[in-house]
Length: 448
Image (cartoon, rainbow, N blue to C red):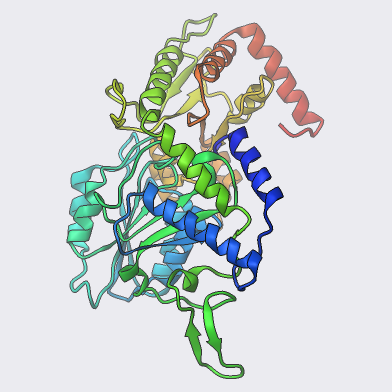
């Protein structure tokens, strides 16, 4: 669903912490504010430890990954000779940076997605080489890489970020889907900046993410405005502005979420305990899902109940600390007994009747979705102002996928229930009953 289930022990521990302490806005020196600053500093240190960051990295707290990516996009010093290179299989927050690039006259270059998502390394390297900055110091260029696709389950080869860096690009990693289940080291892959959301990692708190960046990279960014907390002195009326002393303060607009930062520290420590085990555990669950779902057949025609579109790992993780070559999600389409596509909205409605939460649609990743659905030519023919409804009517079906995501809190019972639900869709009597309920809910205006 794009967010992890929050552990009861984490919520209870944080509620007890808030009950026993009084915290204040960090933009002061009162006792409560000093206490908040202490826990904010601890959280920054824990983020750096979790990401194995060497000296020279700074943690900037944001509302989420999107906020972190926007900080880079709005502040990056694009010029008319600059290039912004990104993967088609990326989140909209990564695509959105192209608006800042184009506004400053920079070129935008896409690395195409493979049919199962992600990118072909040789193709990516060729595009990076063809558009490399002629003079990195004078012509800043940016490469944004998605660590793990949130729709195709494709995990990027991080060596391509290292390659881009060797060509003179600044490198930005969207790790929102990667770090909840995969260890990542900034020492091994020293990208210039990485964006994350903590609620995707351990569920609580929401509204807190981070941009972790090199000090040398931040020094080259030029913010388009200033706000409370980012400055030391402002001349009014006038034009003189003196930036805040701490580098991270120059990028944290207004008041940070100081009441929640202790939970970030506790959450990272909790996740760190389980992280070495997660790839093995999730690989087993994913393998069970893939084999069980692929074997399902309709009871009337013996045709497949569904089709898996996302990348499936070629090998199963066997030992602790071994890393999976993909993530732990499935993007699928449900099929009727004659092979016709069943509407994703029907599947989501039916799943909710069994208390199963599924994500449907293009999950904010239009490039990855287009590749998986085979509609890249249709995507290329979109016209300005086109709506999703118009696009779907033209193609004659709902767009998107049904996504099943596994994470820290999932167990075998969860996977088994998904298989039982999919099995029920293959049973004519049950499917017809659910279909009638779905049609009825639409006619009465009830949300599905």
